[in-house]
Image 1 (cartoon, rainbow over the protein chains, first blue to last red):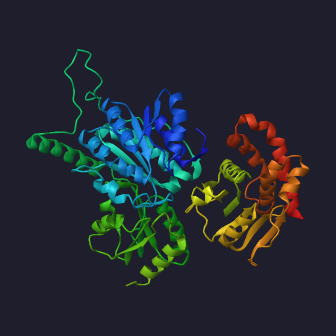
Image 2 (cartoon, chains in turn purple, brown):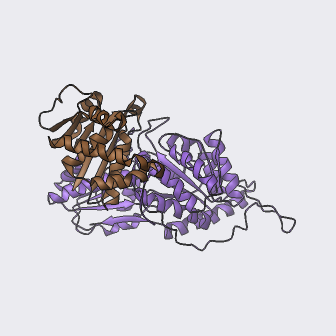
Image 3 (cartoon, helix red, strand yellow):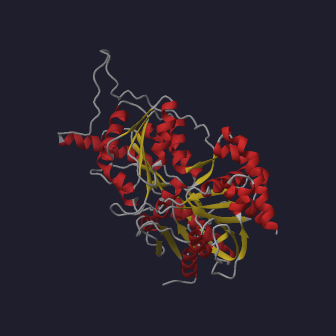
Length: 353
Length: 180
């Protein structure tokens, strides 16, 4: 298929429909409003249902119900709206309900701003809801990656019976780029024999629930979930990395900031500084192991985020004390400039303290 | 080649539209493109702007921050706001019909285009944006005018194809004005 120019938010909708999403429940919020707008038009044409819920909380609980009945279902929002969904997300994780949740992050905390942000990293990777649970989390950096990972997210959600998050930001949601909506690679998926589709009088009822009153039983359920999360950690890590072996400085960034870092790296290389990069595409599971590939010439790591420094914790786990870790960040909806990143790269390469 | 152009004016002048046309045309020519609209509080204030990057290479930041290579400004608030975002020697294309003051910066390559008058000469004031785009393309050669016309139906739909001749004239008129 030929490339088309699409806005990130609209591309999310197009990708979801192509991946077989039949139900969308949501409540609009800047900078992700074009997702429900697009889907409200396009999903009914594809034989699905769009429903604008009365709130984000209602929407995620509708997702719980639809996913529990085995449907391919999605919701989308931006930071404060995603906060409202946290109870529903932990319920989905506990009851093992496959669903896709898109967060076009904006500045926080609280109602925050409507400009791009990345400060929901802790919430996405540590779980904003209660209990021991994990959600696979993709952080695309272009509109092409956004559509590719939205499509993949539906398969992964079904494969693991787990919610999958797409964590992009307002910039990814708002920009237009060339995109090709490729047919997703078919994936072998287990049958949804657990779904509450009605017994038809032919089988025993199935129960989809996250409540276990017997502690022993709940621990067993937790052990099962932990096994599943381990499998994800083993099999689902995705990242982009380059120039690690002979780098003097290694930058770590995801999503929008990774693009700005790449511009800064080109500028640094033009000045003769060797800079490598690690770009996590899955925020959870995080690509800890790739940090071992950083060579002996490295003087430090520079983590760049649109937050006060959240992913930096994972970067420190990854580098395990071998190198100093520096931080360049903007908050509130501000976006870092290549110039400020270049200045930090030069400082570190020159032996920053 | 990396062209980073800001387009700005007030709502209804077709700013977002010419941005999309340029981005789409770039894509049709096999270049990398991004189009980033303003969606923040400034949009609520009635001004509209977008940043378009057209590049042979992978595009880093889709934002333009002090590194714009060109700006098309359709009204005075836009000129005041965005002349600051250009690199020294950057092209500032000013809609002379609505802006009667000069930019404060003296290190820019400035062009004055009477876009509204030229559009009215074609019998339709609405194509002032296309006049400005035509001037910009003449000055930068970022994409071919033919690519913009091919992009036209992609952006506006097949049912707007009858407007292509008028828009082509507007592009050519803008190009001519920039030559003077």
